[in-house]
Length: 373
Image 1 (cartoon, helix red, strand yellow):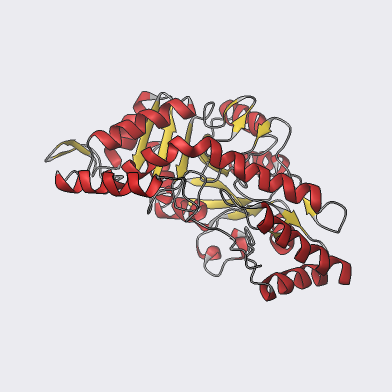
Image 2 (spheres, rainbow, N blue to C red):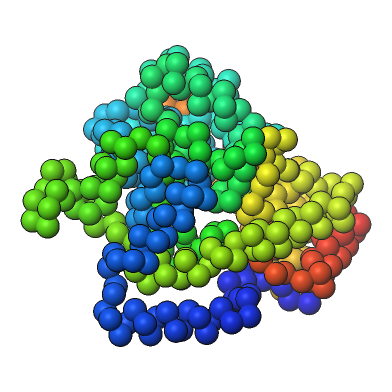
């Protein structure tokens, strides 16, 4: 049975009809930029993240750049970044003219390695750091990192593109951050009908700067207090997200059930399935397996392809190993655990309302490949 890695078409009953009605309504009034839909969505984001301020923007990459710019990170500033993350985390630092220092990963949860992180701070005294909350959870050392950054005057940006809906110590993961970001790319747990992003903070000045930067640095329609750019979330995307967020609990529940199904049925066959640390409740963003046996990993992937079952490798290459990264990197701190994860990771299909029949098909193919090995 063919199973996609991600299926964005599993809509709830009546969803598409509501969406079509909303598009017609906004189109009839030419309500395309700003307005009630954006304001409503930002209020919802503030409530769900327990953040005083939620500022929407055009995409998750812009969100990181806006956060860095709001913190006055710029030319020649040193910024720590995880060596294993999506490229946007790295390029956002470069795009504000700062210099990235890559920091190795923790094998147990995929987050940034705390020992390497503190070593990097002590050695290079960076102005800021960006950490990424991967897989639908965050590092087991999140509180330690936040406290350490405060004590050492390191401005911490938390890239939460994969963790909307994640709970840390029984509260939204974004709540305790100085400034954090997310993405509403369609494949995310809370996905738009196109690109979108947001920045969260409890700091009024930072919030004001983010909002200003995202709208050309405006102080009035033709007055400018900062040099920003156009990074507004449009009304249609906000409207789609306002509809989608109503179904977020059931979509997260479905994702978590899928991850739990794999955990139960693929135990003891050579796949190390990483789970959220104890202080977290994951949002079910993805299933994460590590297969140390290179031949076995190849056999599993070949078998999945032959049965038309999708899979992912989140992520297949470290930041320090990318073709152009050495043109911008200031240094790397730590070992090669990031590369070890990149070389061994495999992600099985997880999306809202994946069926048990589909999950069984995936499990049968993976088990068969492991047994043949």
